[in-house]
Every structure is written in structure tokens, then in C-alpha cells.
Amino acid sequence: MRFYEIYGGILESEFEFPELRPTRPAVADWIIRATDAPVPDGIAESLGWDAVEPNVRVHAYRLASGYRLQFDDTGLFDVSSDGHEITWRRPATADERAARLDLTGRVLALALHIGGCLSLHASAVSIGGRAIAFLAPKGSGKTTLAVALERAGAEFMSDDTVPVEVTPSPIARPGAHSVRMFRDTAASLGMQMDLAMDSSMTKPMFRDSAIGRRRVQAAPLDALYLLSSVSAQDELPVRRERLSEPEAVMRVLGQTKIGVLLGGREAESVLKRAADLVSAVPVYELKVARDLSRLGDVVASFFAWHSHEPERAVTPVADCA
Image: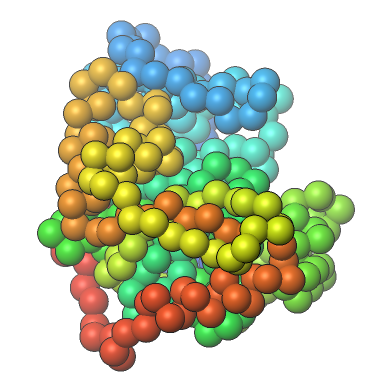
């Protein structure tokens, strides 16, 4: 078995995850096994579905033994009722790389949900020991902004998925150590292509060594930003506007990692966590000029908005492993 660090916990797996940082054998928060065995009989209650790619969907089900995510291309992933054990029912034609992305994305987000976390579709950095997260659909620039902030002195925390412990003082967990970026954007930020796992891809995945400053501990969540791009000719490089709580709840729900999947009896818990989070953390609409030459001004604004005293030690207070 292999052991990796992810989302502030330990993942134990039968197969390799080159995207993750290996660690020494330890008591695992999540254990992943693969099997070719037939799907066991039983009633599966449909919860919801979401689009992974234009021609690929994922469906969520509630089982007597836990939960199931069924992807059109990579097969079935059964998650135990406590979120600890994950079984990949692997089809013969499955692409293991795509399956790893599903596992570190929606499947572990489901396990985190079972443990009490709210997983956001976001990138995050830490400034002065406090986290800020950028929520947006694919291709909106959230990773670009996070890496630019890291280059200027922030600590990179997560790309694509940010689990949050929703307590009276919400805590953001660190994510996977790899980063996916478009080639031209990566080049503009000084990312070395020899650190990409597959440099031939339009959007390569870069190894953890491509990021110099990382935060591997949880951090208090300072703010959430709903990111959108505006014309490069916009008068200001960046603008933010704080949203009212009702609007913020609905907007944040739209950027949860698996909120769309969890209908039925699970919808209430997702809504409550989003409402509790928004009541404790400010949520802003963020408009950024789509112009890499103005990115320095955007970064400077964030350091002005989020300057803090030196951090104190933070210990996660909610178990969402």
C-alpha cells in the first residue's frame, strides 16, 4: 500500500498517485482499493447528477452501506457510511489517470462531506496565516490568481478543491500538491515545463516542486471570492463587492464540489453548511481584468485587503476526514 498527503489527512491506496505527495505509512483517514468484482445487489437511491465533461456525467446514489458515485467513463466508486473506505469498481477500459482525478476530486469530496466538511470548487492561498479562496467554474482564472499571489509572497494551499470545516470560525484545509494550468499562463508566471507531468497537454499538471511556498496546515478562512473576468480595457484591474448573505448562500452553493450531486435527504445538510459558512465569513463578488499585464496590480490589492498580524497556531476543531 502507498500513503499520500491530501486535504489535511492521509490517503492509503493500492495504486500510485503521482499527483500527490508521498508520506510515511500512518493511520489513514481514507483507504482506496480497486476491484473487478461484480457490483453487489442492493437498492440504490438516486440523489442527483452532474456533468464532468461535455459527454461525461456522474450520478450519486445512497446505499444501505454508504454512498456511490457512478462515472460514465471511470466506473463506480463506493464510499462507506463513515467515509473511511473507498472501493473503485474498475471497468476494463477505464483510464487510470482520469480515475485518479475523479478520486481526488468528487470522490474524496463526498468522503469529506460525510465527515462534516463543505468542499468548494476553488483555489486558495494563505496571507498572514489566514486563508482566502477563489470560487469559480473551470477556466475562470482562479488557479492563475492563486499562483500569482504565491509568487508575490502568499502560501499556496489548494487548486480546484478547498475543504472547509464549517465551525463558528471556519477553517480551510490544504489540498492536493499538484497544480493544473494552461501552458501559456504557466509560462507567463515562470512555471517550468520540465516540472509538468505531461508537458504535451494544453493544460498540464505541474508537480508540487513547481510551487515554492506552500501551506500544508489548515488555516482560518478570511474571505471567499466569487471570481469573474471582465474586459482587459476595464478601468480598474480588480473590484470587489460584498454580497448579502442570502445572495452569497446561493452563489456559494453553485460552487460546491458535489452540492449538485447531493439532492434528496442530503440537500438540507449542504444548504445548512453553506448558510453557516456565509454567516461567519465575508463573501465578495470579484471582478478581475482579463489582462496578465495587470496581474501585479490585482495581487497588490489582495495584500492590502488581507494584511494581518503574525499568525498563531491553528488546530482544526472539526473532524471531517
